[in-house]
Length: 209
Image (tube, rainbow, N blue to C red):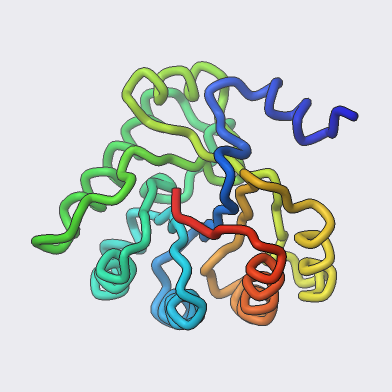
Protein backbone atom coordinates (compact mmCIF):
# COMPACT_ATOMS: atom_id res chain seq x y z
CA UNK A 1 0.00 0.00 0.00
CA UNK A 2 1.43 3.39 -1.00
CA UNK A 3 1.26 5.86 1.87
CA UNK A 4 0.60 9.58 1.50
CA UNK A 5 4.10 10.43 2.74
CA UNK A 6 5.58 8.39 -0.11
CA UNK A 7 3.44 10.23 -2.64
CA UNK A 8 4.47 13.54 -1.04
CA UNK A 9 8.14 12.71 -1.57
CA UNK A 10 7.53 12.05 -5.26
CA UNK A 11 5.99 15.52 -5.53
CA UNK A 12 9.08 17.13 -3.97
CA UNK A 13 12.16 16.14 -6.00
CA UNK A 14 15.57 17.02 -4.54
CA UNK A 15 14.21 16.36 -1.04
CA UNK A 16 15.00 13.48 1.33
CA UNK A 17 12.06 12.36 3.49
CA UNK A 18 13.49 9.09 4.78
CA UNK A 19 16.80 7.34 4.27
CA UNK A 20 18.88 4.34 5.27
CA UNK A 21 18.06 1.77 7.92
CA UNK A 22 18.30 3.83 11.13
CA UNK A 23 15.95 6.41 12.64
CA UNK A 24 17.08 10.03 12.63
CA UNK A 25 16.11 12.58 15.28
CA UNK A 26 16.28 16.14 14.01
CA UNK A 27 15.79 19.49 15.74
CA UNK A 28 14.97 22.81 14.05
CA UNK A 29 15.34 26.49 14.93
CA UNK A 30 18.12 26.50 17.54
CA UNK A 31 20.45 26.97 19.13
CA UNK A 32 18.43 28.35 22.05
CA UNK A 33 20.17 28.53 25.47
CA UNK A 34 16.98 27.75 27.41
CA UNK A 35 16.25 24.63 25.37
CA UNK A 36 19.13 23.16 23.36
CA UNK A 37 21.36 22.21 26.34
CA UNK A 38 18.42 20.28 27.84
CA UNK A 39 18.08 18.36 24.57
CA UNK A 40 21.79 17.59 24.67
CA UNK A 41 21.46 16.22 28.21
CA UNK A 42 18.69 13.85 27.15
CA UNK A 43 20.55 12.67 24.05
CA UNK A 44 23.71 12.11 26.09
CA UNK A 45 21.78 10.15 28.73
CA UNK A 46 20.54 7.70 26.10
CA UNK A 47 23.78 7.66 24.11
CA UNK A 48 22.29 8.80 20.81
CA UNK A 49 23.31 11.38 18.21
CA UNK A 50 20.98 13.76 16.40
CA UNK A 51 21.01 16.46 13.74
CA UNK A 52 20.35 20.13 14.51
CA UNK A 53 19.15 22.40 11.71
CA UNK A 54 20.25 25.79 12.95
CA UNK A 55 19.13 29.32 12.23
CA UNK A 56 22.22 31.40 11.50
CA UNK A 57 20.99 34.38 13.52
CA UNK A 58 20.68 32.13 16.58
CA UNK A 59 24.18 30.77 16.02
CA UNK A 60 25.50 34.34 16.03
CA UNK A 61 23.55 35.14 19.20
CA UNK A 62 24.46 31.95 21.07
CA UNK A 63 27.81 30.64 19.78
CA UNK A 64 28.52 28.90 23.08
CA UNK A 65 25.42 26.71 22.67
CA UNK A 66 26.36 25.98 19.06
CA UNK A 67 29.76 24.87 20.32
CA UNK A 68 28.14 22.54 22.86
CA UNK A 69 26.19 20.81 20.07
CA UNK A 70 29.23 20.32 17.87
CA UNK A 71 31.55 19.20 20.65
CA UNK A 72 28.95 16.62 21.72
CA UNK A 73 29.35 15.00 18.29
CA UNK A 74 26.00 15.89 16.75
CA UNK A 75 25.53 16.92 13.14
CA UNK A 76 24.51 20.43 12.21
CA UNK A 77 22.62 21.67 9.18
CA UNK A 78 21.53 24.95 7.61
CA UNK A 79 18.04 26.34 8.31
CA UNK A 80 18.60 29.77 6.67
CA UNK A 81 19.93 32.80 8.52
CA UNK A 82 16.53 34.34 9.38
CA UNK A 83 14.17 31.34 9.16
CA UNK A 84 12.91 32.39 5.73
CA UNK A 85 10.00 30.77 3.95
CA UNK A 86 11.13 30.07 0.39
CA UNK A 87 7.65 30.50 -1.09
CA UNK A 88 7.65 34.19 -0.14
CA UNK A 89 11.19 35.04 -1.29
CA UNK A 90 12.96 35.53 -4.59
CA UNK A 91 15.53 32.94 -5.50
CA UNK A 92 18.42 35.39 -5.15
CA UNK A 93 17.30 36.57 -1.69
CA UNK A 94 16.64 33.04 -0.49
CA UNK A 95 19.96 31.62 -1.69
CA UNK A 96 21.88 34.60 -0.27
CA UNK A 97 20.28 34.04 3.12
CA UNK A 98 21.23 30.36 3.05
CA UNK A 99 24.79 31.24 2.10
CA UNK A 100 24.95 33.68 5.02
CA UNK A 101 23.81 30.93 7.38
CA UNK A 102 26.39 28.55 5.97
CA UNK A 103 29.17 31.07 6.45
CA UNK A 104 27.98 31.72 10.00
CA UNK A 105 27.98 28.04 10.92
CA UNK A 106 31.41 27.46 9.42
CA UNK A 107 32.75 30.62 11.03
CA UNK A 108 31.71 29.49 14.52
CA UNK A 109 32.94 25.92 14.14
CA UNK A 110 35.36 25.27 17.04
CA UNK A 111 38.95 24.51 16.15
CA UNK A 112 39.64 20.82 15.96
CA UNK A 113 35.99 19.82 15.55
CA UNK A 114 34.91 17.99 12.43
CA UNK A 115 32.53 19.85 10.17
CA UNK A 116 29.72 17.35 10.61
CA UNK A 117 27.28 17.24 7.70
CA UNK A 118 27.54 20.93 6.82
CA UNK A 119 26.01 20.26 3.41
CA UNK A 120 22.62 19.53 4.99
CA UNK A 121 19.77 22.01 4.48
CA UNK A 122 16.19 22.02 5.71
CA UNK A 123 13.75 24.62 4.34
CA UNK A 124 11.89 26.44 7.14
CA UNK A 125 8.25 25.33 7.15
CA UNK A 126 9.32 22.77 4.54
CA UNK A 127 8.56 25.39 1.88
CA UNK A 128 10.87 26.03 -1.05
CA UNK A 129 10.04 26.34 -4.73
CA UNK A 130 11.21 23.66 -7.13
CA UNK A 131 13.74 26.02 -8.74
CA UNK A 132 15.10 26.92 -5.29
CA UNK A 133 15.54 23.26 -4.41
CA UNK A 134 17.14 22.57 -7.76
CA UNK A 135 19.62 25.43 -7.30
CA UNK A 136 20.52 24.22 -3.81
CA UNK A 137 21.07 20.68 -5.05
CA UNK A 138 23.41 22.02 -7.72
CA UNK A 139 25.34 23.83 -4.99
CA UNK A 140 25.89 20.52 -3.23
CA UNK A 141 23.28 20.73 -0.50
CA UNK A 142 21.36 17.68 0.61
CA UNK A 143 17.79 18.83 1.27
CA UNK A 144 16.39 17.08 4.33
CA UNK A 145 12.67 17.03 5.05
CA UNK A 146 10.98 14.47 7.36
CA UNK A 147 8.41 11.72 7.31
CA UNK A 148 7.25 12.28 10.91
CA UNK A 149 6.36 15.85 11.89
CA UNK A 150 5.70 15.91 15.64
CA UNK A 151 4.10 19.39 15.58
CA UNK A 152 5.64 20.02 18.99
CA UNK A 153 5.23 23.75 18.27
CA UNK A 154 1.42 23.39 18.35
CA UNK A 155 -0.01 23.85 21.86
CA UNK A 156 -3.05 21.81 20.82
CA UNK A 157 -0.90 18.70 20.24
CA UNK A 158 -0.15 16.89 23.50
CA UNK A 159 3.01 14.91 24.22
CA UNK A 160 0.83 11.80 24.38
CA UNK A 161 -0.45 12.43 20.88
CA UNK A 162 3.06 13.08 19.61
CA UNK A 163 4.32 9.83 21.10
CA UNK A 164 1.41 7.87 19.64
CA UNK A 165 2.15 9.28 16.22
CA UNK A 166 5.80 8.26 16.44
CA UNK A 167 4.88 4.75 17.56
CA UNK A 168 2.39 4.33 14.73
CA UNK A 169 4.38 5.88 11.87
CA UNK A 170 8.04 5.13 12.55
CA UNK A 171 9.90 2.79 10.22
CA UNK A 172 13.51 2.17 9.36
CA UNK A 173 14.79 5.27 7.62
CA UNK A 174 12.36 7.62 9.34
CA UNK A 175 13.40 11.23 9.89
CA UNK A 176 11.60 12.67 12.91
CA UNK A 177 11.15 16.44 13.15
CA UNK A 178 11.37 18.11 16.57
CA UNK A 179 12.12 21.76 17.44
CA UNK A 180 14.55 23.03 20.09
CA UNK A 181 12.63 26.30 20.33
CA UNK A 182 10.92 28.18 23.15
CA UNK A 183 7.52 27.53 21.58
CA UNK A 184 8.10 23.75 21.53
CA UNK A 185 10.12 23.49 24.73
CA UNK A 186 7.65 21.93 27.15
CA UNK A 187 6.02 19.43 24.80
CA UNK A 188 9.22 18.40 23.06
CA UNK A 189 11.14 17.79 26.28
CA UNK A 190 8.25 15.77 27.67
CA UNK A 191 8.04 13.37 24.75
CA UNK A 192 11.70 13.10 23.68
CA UNK A 193 12.87 10.66 26.40
CA UNK A 194 9.79 8.48 25.90
CA UNK A 195 10.29 8.45 22.14
CA UNK A 196 13.94 7.42 22.48
CA UNK A 197 13.07 4.68 24.96
CA UNK A 198 10.40 3.33 22.62
CA UNK A 199 12.70 3.37 19.59
CA UNK A 200 15.49 1.64 21.47
CA UNK A 201 13.08 -0.97 22.89
CA UNK A 202 12.02 -1.82 19.33
CA UNK A 203 15.59 -2.26 18.18
CA UNK A 204 15.90 0.87 16.07
CA UNK A 205 19.36 2.36 15.69
CA UNK A 206 19.24 6.13 16.23
CA UNK A 207 21.84 8.09 14.28
CA UNK A 208 22.65 11.58 13.06
CA UNK A 209 22.40 12.34 9.35
